[in-house]
Length: 253
Length: 253
Image 1 (cartoon, rainbow over the protein chains, first blue to last red):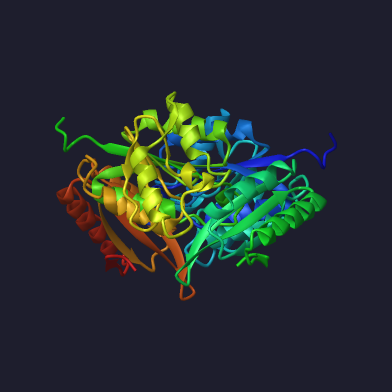
Image 2: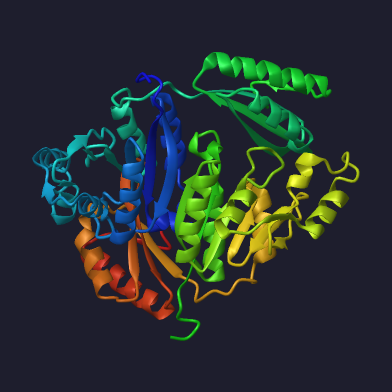
C-alpha cells in the first residue's frame, strides 16, 4: 500500500457546556469536516463533551489513539472554565508549562490593551512539548502537541488557525463526491441505490431526502477516492433513474 | 436525595456520513439540547459517528449505560445506508422485527403514493420490544426501546418527534440560566469570574467572548438548578463588574 492509498483519519472533540446546553449552535464540526476533506483526511468521529477534566481526558485519549490526528475546539481562553490545556496535559501525562513564545505574543498583543494579567497569561500555558499554531485573528495562539491540534472555540478564530495549517498535514487522496438529485422519493429507488452501490466496490452512495416546494425529493451523493469509479457509478445510477422514468439533475438540486 | 434533586442526563448519537463529510451542517444537537433543558434533562455528551454498524454499536452502548436516556438521530430511512435499527438491535442483543403498527402506518401513508415497497417496509423494522414515536410530519415513525429514542435525521421531522415526547420523560429540576454581558474583554475579568463562581457552590459561570462592531465583548452565563442561587450569584457578579468600572447589560448583549 503506497502513501496515497492509506486512509488518513482525524477525530474531533468539541469542548463546551454552551453547546450541550443548546445556548450556542456549533459551527466547528462543519468547517473542520470540510477543511479536512480538502487535506485528504477523513473526519471519523466527533465527541461533544462538557467542561470537566475527566470527560475531556476520556474523549481525547479514546480518539487520539484511533486516528492519525485529533482536533479539539474550545476551552483555551483566559477564564476559569477554560481547562482544555490542563485536561490534554493530563491525558498525555505531561506538565503544563508557560510557552515563552506564546507569552511574548500575548505581551505584544495586549501591550496597548492593559498588558498581560493572570487571566491572559493562562493563554500562554501549553502541555510540555507543544508548538504553537498561528492565530492572526486575535492574540492567543492555538497549540499543537504531536498529532493533537488544540483550536479555539470561536469559529472565525478556528477558521484562521485552520488556514495556518492548510497544506501542512500529511493526508491521502481526497474523498471525491458527485451528486445527482431530483424530486424523487428515496423510498422509490432504494433497491436501485443498493444495487448500484454493490456493483461499485470503491464507492459509497448516500441518500439525503428533503421536502421543498411541497414536494419530496432526494440528493444522492457518490463518494470515493477514485474519480473513475465515481464517474462510472454515477453513469450507472443515472441510467437506472432514467430507466425508471425519473427526472434528475446532475450536481443535485 | 428526592427525585427533584436527581440530575437526569441524556446522551446523543448523531449517525451520518453526511455530517462527518461536512456536506450537511447538523441542526439536531442544538434543537435536542434545548428541548432536553426544558424537560429537566441535561445533555451530557454527543457523539457523531459514521454509517457503520460497529461504530454505532460502540457509541450506543457507551452512552446508554452512562445516562438515563439515549437519543439517536439519522439512519432510519428507506435506503441501504440506513442501518440504525440493525445497529441498535445488535447493541441490545435483540432481533429486528417488522412492527405491525408501523407497517399499518406506512401502508396508510403510501396508499396514494404507490404503496409500500421493499425500501418503504424497511421503515417498519424495529428492535424487538420497541414502541413507536409518533411522526406527524411524514410517514415513518420514530422508535422507543426502553431508555433509547431513535429519531429521524431530517431536523423538522425530529422536531415533530420531540413535540410528541414533550412532557412524557421524567426529568429533574430544569437548569436555570441568567446572562449578563457587555463590551468587556473576558481576560480583564477572569479573576472576578473565578472568585464569584467559587463563592457560589451550586452555580457555574460560563464566559462567552465575541467580536462585534469592531469591539471585544463577552456574555457571562450563570447556571444552576436553584433560582435563588442564580440570583445571588448574578448580584455579586454585577457588583464586581460595577466596582471594576465596566458597563454591563443584564440579559446579555
